[in-house]
Length: 142
Image (tube, helix red, strand yellow):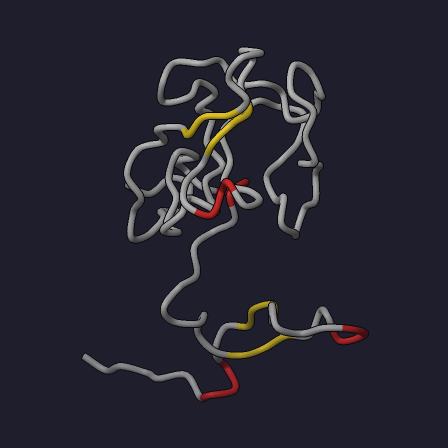
C-alpha cells in the first residue's frame, strides 16, 4: 500500500473568519481551528441547548416562567414597560418580537427570565433545562 501526502500548499482552503476589511473574503489554507467553536444559535440542531453559565447564549423557545406565568412579548410594553430592545450583538442579544425566556440585562446575570403577562408579577426566572458543555452541528447527535 502506497500513501501519498499532499504538499502543504495543497491543503483544502477555507474562508478565514478572522479576516476583516477589504480582505474579509481572504482564503486561508489548513484545517479548521481546534477546538471547534459552537455554531451560532440559528444553525444549532438543538435550540434548547446553551453553554454559558448564566444561559446568556440560550435561544430556545421556553415562554412560561418557572412558576407558570406566561411570558410577555419583548416587543410589547404592556402589562410591564421595560428597556429591553433588540440589539443583535449587544447586551440585549436574543430579544425580539417573541416571548421566549432570555438572559439579558441585570436580571439575566444569573439565569434566563421573562417579563410576565401577569400585571402583579413583573418578571420571573425560567426553567430552561441544564446547560451543556458543547453544541452539536445540525444533523449530528447532541
